Image 1 (cartoon, rainbow, N blue to C red):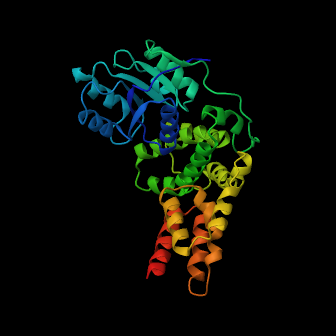
Image 2: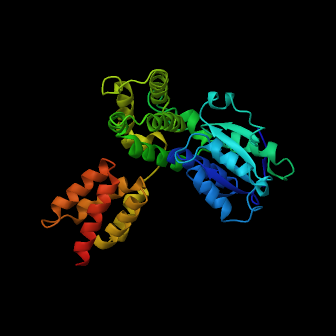
Image 3: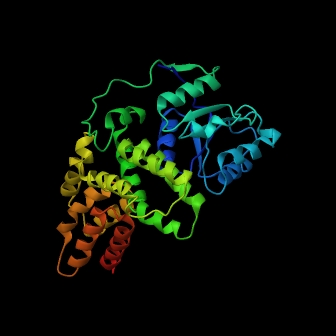
Amino acid sequence: MDRIKSYTKLNIILVEDSEISHLVALSLLESLGLNVHSAYNGSECLSILSNNKSDYFDLIFMDLQMPIMDGITTVEKIRKNKSYDKIKIIILSADDIETSNLNLIEKGIHSYTKKPVSKDSIVKTLNELFSDLPNEMNKISDEVNYPKEDNSILDIKNTLPRLDNNRILYKDLIYTFTKNQKFFVKEFIALSEVDDFEIMKLKLHTLKGDSRNIGALRLSTEVEKFEYLFIQNPFKPNNINMGSIEIELLNLANRMEELDELLLIDNSNVDQIINDNNFSFEYFLQELIELLDNCNYEAKLYVKQASNYKNEHNKFLIEKLESEVNDFNYEEGLVIATSLKSEVIG
């Protein structure tokens, strides 16, 4: 086990376009005490660099495949500016094949970390690059009580330790993944109608990486098989040849109700807080709106109390609100909750 060093003085840029991969890396990096600036493509990374002193940043974590500006192009632009010579760059990649033909040292890249990242892999890389930093503690994490495993859908036992045993983060990742990818097959087929091959490749790459990140290994395997065939000899996707991917996405979505039980998370305090405080309808809606606006999974728990405020006037909207939130349509739920609040305020 690698020792954790004192990273609190390090300023870094995390450049990652996938929301899931970004959340994972950001959480793990911040848990180590690093000061993290977020960018979602190479262009944003260059803007962050230009808006700060040239010697401010110590390190950049850079994904390879990104829209607008990819990782290698971004690295080349950074290395053309000699004032950034001291900044170390770590490449993040889901596949070894992506880096097999890259001469990392020649391109000014210091290291390579395979996704999905873990706290162990980050610490190992940081220790190699910043060997002069003092040790802070001798181990990364304590023994934990592992939750029940659902091998058929999620590899919880191996995924949770990689996320530093952060159950709340894991739940948020699974929710975010389901929200972002529930219409993947439909959207992917639509892209084929305009022959946007590069975007289609990127979407497959993202789905594969994100499914690995949340431990949906069966889904990841199906996506990887489809991706290989599609890239080798592009063909028209349809509901039949993408059927296996759609089934695995549905299987994952259907397990959302059981997440708290699977992850050993106790949410009984949510109902208790609402009941104990006898919230007004306006206050209840305001709290719900904040949860929905932040795409917080607890909105699904919170909305269960909406029936307490139901009357003949708002019955239809409240039932619609409950339905949308329970189906993870948080954007629609936000519109309805905001409308209800406007009516209450008058």
